Image (cartoon, rainbow, N blue to C red; front, side, top):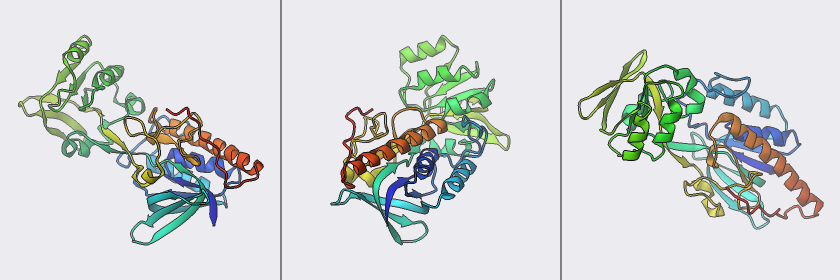
Length: 319
């Protein structure tokens, strides 16, 4: 069977794309590894009608909805590669979880919705509190940390901007750079104007107990009572399996797309966290909805042209 679309990734972006395509009577194979970046997060916020829902429950509800359509199939797999066939369709090779058995999916178009992987600073200390006391998204989780003693832990060059956003939720904010020197003297002075202290010593431990995080202990021997906060990960787009297609990425390795979620490779679209922009559930779902509408129209253009295998040229306006 040749599916109209193979959607890789069953987060909000991939699920929204699948739902939109299903309602346009397009056949879809949805592939997902069930390894979401937010697996450690107990609740998610900002998704209209589902504020405070478990991220895993949100994914399960979405999957149940799309699988109610008879022309949607689902497989729990890890995608190994995507190649473009001589007839200009795509062949997706995936391995079923828990075995070495492979599955092959032949599709006319592909939606990349695989999300990101992340590397946490001082992961051995941060990881036990990640998803409970510590989060990465200020827009999603800042409200629930209001008026607490907050930490911002990171080693990137955007800590000043992030600290000023976090200050909206609490007037007691400290920045911990783990010895990286990520905040220069100008940044330190800027944050000092708002009573935000920058501590550059390496982190020795993050202390806490059943009630959550309690303090950050530094290598210089100082102990800073903090009961919540944010961490700035290094994010990486998980698209190594698609490298042979020659998909364009930006300086951060994110997939470049135009306003219709098209990549530079005709027939390949990308949505969600692997594209530049805001990393929020509603945004990813919106991009998936846009992609579904655009894909359907691209198919119609091909069909009206009388060449089922013709490719609609991708836009040159990528971002």
